[in-house]
Length: 618
Image 1 (cartoon, rainbow, N blue to C red):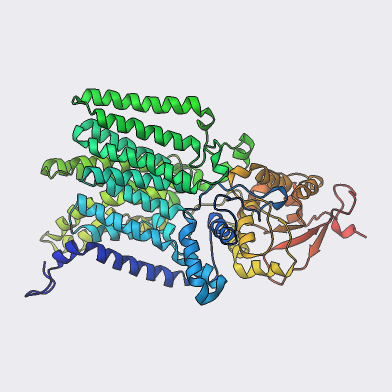
Image 2: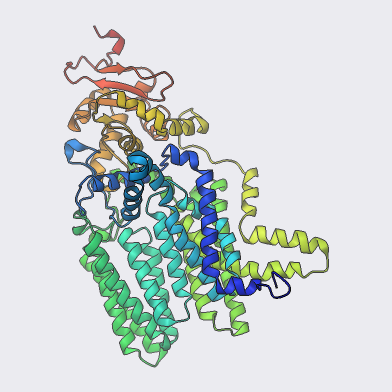
């Protein structure tokens, strides 16, 4: 197809030769759309997730002089030494660099806002490039624009790159996309090194993608078992995985992560990765000729790794958080994204599951077609099909696997659309050509699911005790809104006893300290907040005093409060919400329209009994 008929530039040559340049142009357009669409979020620093707020606080602390390997957050629970955060500083680097670059031109506050707006778009460029490269390697040199279009429809994935989404998930998804490109690489050594390095970088950031990294390693090993000529891929993968995780641990593991913990790249997982790398490297050197022998050695290596892990680190055979049973029951079991997809309403489950299902079908179809065409991509497509199916099955474990599942489905969906849509376009019937091709694309890309969910029942709340979902969502938004929080700065800096999920946002926007945040290593603080709000009024003051809290800050009807009321209908929070306020809580006036309720905690007043209302105070 020619863009200009005579002496012009052929469109196919342009798409093939300058695909990377055009991909970055597409990335720039997506960035522009994101910034325009989310401009208000940038201006009001709408860091919508607790982790986004904590990430900014981590960057601020580092820029203010906190040690590189010290990631403790001292603005939460300062009386007990702060909260231990299990992350690393790798993702802090681009945010801090943007702040330092922008600060001389616009001041600190604006620099932080725009750094948080721009930083999530950086890993998107890597993701789009890797997705385009995979499509070129497996489907056609001209299929990459279609792959990018389908990627834009992966709403769960794309939300990880939205401005202000500065948590580490966008970077981990970018490295996952690079892993797929490495699996699809026909050049064995380069492909193995790509998979190993991307896995090492992902693990350095966090363990969220550990199952995918392990699956990618298993696929590389399976390719070697099937074809001994894949020894070079296995060899480079083993070296880069062990070397990359070692360098990542040395450069980024915090002081707290030097302990034998199970929730980050600690000595536990470092030794596992290095051991696995050394064993796989030994297998690649041996490289026996018989497939049966390679299979036996591969199984033996896997068994040695599993057995060694179980014997040396039995504490890590359960949940990686190593949370107490009470913490799991009280808090972790209520984290919605940690629930399997079948425990969610249809309007949530269908959009998440549609593309992974289509991706598996498309990858299986592409594998079958590659076998018939004998174009040399069947083994690579088999690897992608296994990876895509694994990602889909992960949804049965936790719905937080949705963004990765959608991302991994792009290759299969693109391969299916590359064949099916042109088939409709070559039909004689106008209806088939127009409506058939459009309908096929909408179904294969998963966009049709967006129309289906409009007619499905909406997901409900989680025990909101008489308050509608809209009331809860309104409270969540109002209490996180910067202008409402900034009004609390009229009160001298103090430690405020408030909800677990409000703690990170409170310390990010105001000068006040909090008590807890939703981070599993700090089980005592989380449980103390829940015990305080669900226990008796007499039990609240001793708990608050242990954390040296000076004020009680409530956000009525915030989603977390529904749990307090559901579990203790006559507990401390439920009583205060009904207006039964203990006499030792001194009301603090807030501006009209504030969504908060604030009291000063009076520790100097003697106990006068459990039911003494504030109105009786003399």
